[in-house]
Length: 212
Image 1 (cartoon, rainbow, N blue to C red):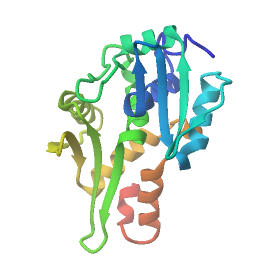
Image 2: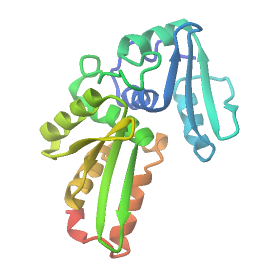
Image 3: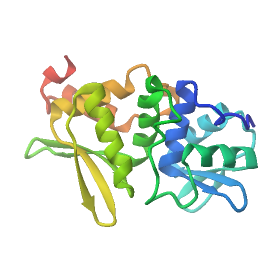
């Protein structure tokens, strides 16, 4: 295990993996145990993260997921300093001061792969892209970044016990996906939303102008 992996976030791989831990990870500070859980169907992506971390411990399987479990104080401490704290769901803050500006989109991509989805209603020709978090402040920071980086306007609204950031126009959705997935480390990603959106264009359900 490269237990210094999260010491400094200085490349796209580290930023992307950090985003995944912010979305689907848990940092148990009492036992210095860090866990990243993904669905059964996403096992291969968890194995790729294992390789990037230079970790040779096999994944563990639960009924509905695979888990990458790291019990190392150094890793737990570094994630805590970056803001990936224990019981983070409703208090997490965007680690804006710990990630260089040119790497922020990779962090967002890792987080989006875990806590984002694309919704479509073909009959109404309506598409929306959502990012979820229990922390409104976290989403407010993402909203500000998207406005500054690619001039996209988003809305943030409560949804049950959490908050939802939504991008509603097809043009903005494609700009967002293209910005994030361009030059990304595709080997680590499901790319579910990008693949689906491009398929809709290929099938004629969306106007091809969004590729321009």
